[in-house]
Length: 400
Ligand SMILES: C[S@@+](CC[C@H](N)C(=O)[O-])C[C@H]1O[C@@H](n2cnc3c(N)ncnc32)[C@H](O)[C@@H]1O
Image 1 (cartoon, rainbow, N blue to C red):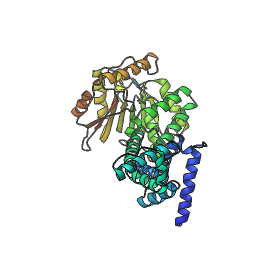
Image 2: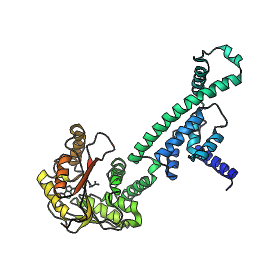
Image 3: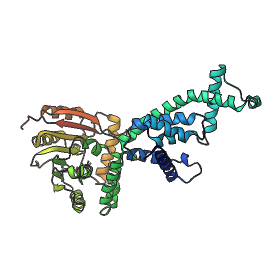
Image 4: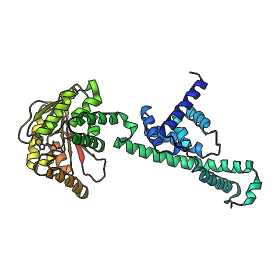
């Protein structure tokens, strides 16, 4: 494709995205455009840094008074700096009909400050100065305002995208979005309520995505108190044909086990479900990964320790034991987490009698005493929850 063809296709792409976003007159201002930009960034596998740089440069261009040339400048500059052209151009639309007068006024005053050492009062006399003087003054001012605003919007974009990236809320992680949709739809046929719950849970709870990296495709997985087996399903969809290891979900709730099994069978997801009281029945087999997501706190501390000791024996060398729990040390945040848990028990959504939160340090000490190398991190998207993740890795030389 030649240079002209490239530019033509860039124009077409930009027009397409802008038009697809809104039919309004000031369509570049429509909020949908931001979603489009983020989706576009996702499809191009752009990192927050690349997007932020493109936004910064685009804003700089948009602040200059070279109206009518912004599209061309965006394409030329973005091509030379290897930035995304569409994002640069969209960011240049900061000079939209609403903001343009304000931006030009600030440019004008900054230009005056540089040229005359003071701001200029707006008066009729200014008309006599001539357009070229105005233009020069505004251009000069834009060379100061542009970098400041570019830096500011670039930085904001970077942090917002980084945050969204973690939350997995935007199109940036369209793969996760697609997986959430597939899982939600799979449950819809059997329970609308559960489908809604699953969608909300997958969107707001980072634990499934956070743990994917710790559990490679071929791992054999034991999900203790796994409910409908959300992690196994997510793992299967995320790794696709590389999710080759066995997956066993243990739970004592008939309904969850039955629902999970039905949905997994219908979709040919390779997951086995077994009804089991995990605090009183020691599981058999050996696993590369044992998960305990939000389940230990349903039993008293001694029982939890015993279960962990038994599970440690079932871990293959090099395997990981992953615990997600509420942290009793975070008093205020734990109040919210406990409150929601109690509601869930009260309305029999979760089958258990009471909760016994432990502090994270207790779990860490316990896993260390087994000889596991441990790490921990917070595992929440919403700041008022106390959940954290503890990962214990068994050494490769370990035999027991
Ligand atoms: C909060 S849910 C978490 C489900 C799953 N781990 C997840 O994160 O998607 C807690 C689960 O633990 C199960 N559970 C509680 N006590 C149990 C026990 N003694 N034996 C087996 N499952 C139990 C409940 O039935 C419920 O499915």
